[in-house]
Image 1 (spheres, one colour):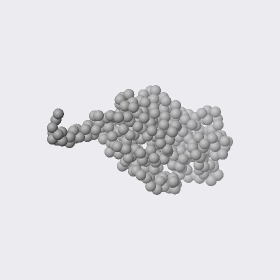
Image 2: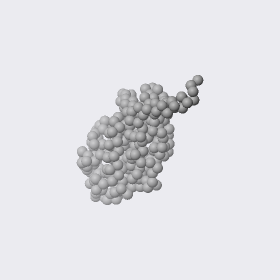
Image 3: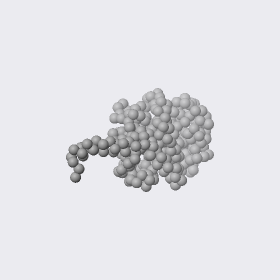
Image 4: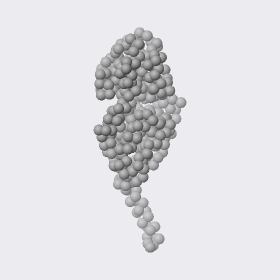
Length: 321
């Protein structure tokens, strides 16, 4: 048995070796990984489970999806987790736009999170009820200007991507289309089909089946470039509103101060999973296009969107309780 004095001397050395190993990512991961996701079911839950299944084998650990209520709770949990790469967050713009929507937050979206990758992008589609006499973006703008305050648009939760897409459209086009708030995008789309509202910005996965049956009319996609999800539709920017661009994007984050080697390893493995043909196909089928960016690219996008969308939110007076 080693003398107690020797063990006492070696303990700090052992701790230094363990810390060095953790910082370099050599021992990562050494326990199950959890991906925290807002809400149960839906696109983000599906994405997280698909990514988790693909990561488990290469990383040699179980990957568990943890569903939490929508809002700030998922981000708060991850922001307070140990920065060791075993707790991750899959989130859309609600994470980094939260400071503009809430009076108080228990986290800072830049300081308290380490970007890993922009996983996917989902274009929204500008759709209208077929009874509306507008068959293009230019015609919709002209109609809205001729009838200020008379047209309504359906929206889901306050500050969601489809809500901001509509407010950006109104701001850039200089039109007054009144928001009608519904509990979710599904309820809003049902209202559009029923003729309770005339306009909506909605994801491709939700809209395409109704576009095909003629229950709604697609005018354009919100992204800067045409989307393979709806190849026959032009962009809003190219069909009457130059410079317009909006999309639902989902990134994966670790707690702030997570060591660089761990972030690098997660980025490589997650991007590898996302680029598998079968994963791309499954995501495409729910209206999502794979991106798989670097951590730096996601960080830059977050900061840019906080400037542009933050101004839009302030100017429109959008707030959440």
